[in-house]
Amino acid sequence: FLISLLQQLKRSGVCSFSFRELCRRNTRKEAAAIFYIFLVLKKQQVLELQQPKPFADLTATAGPMFDKIR
Image 1 (cartoon, rainbow, N blue to C red):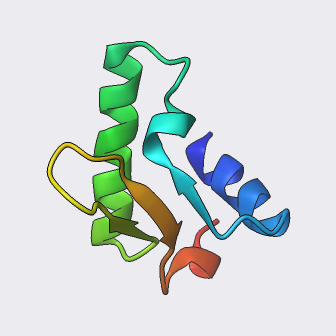
Image 2 (cartoon, rainbow, N blue to C red; image 1 turned 90 degrees about the vertical axis):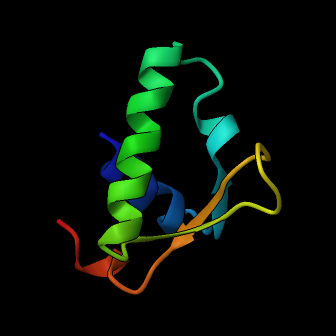
């Protein structure tokens, strides 16, 4: 689900997106699961994550391996 959403965002020209905006309508449990997926994708270099300060929103952009995912 998340990978197809990220691919759609990239195709539409979106360069980055907000974790908070992505999880706006999710439960805390769902948001925690998405956060974990973000960390896994960061480790696999599919996403790059930026957070300007502790507890600030995460901004995700495509990483070097983004185009190699299925």
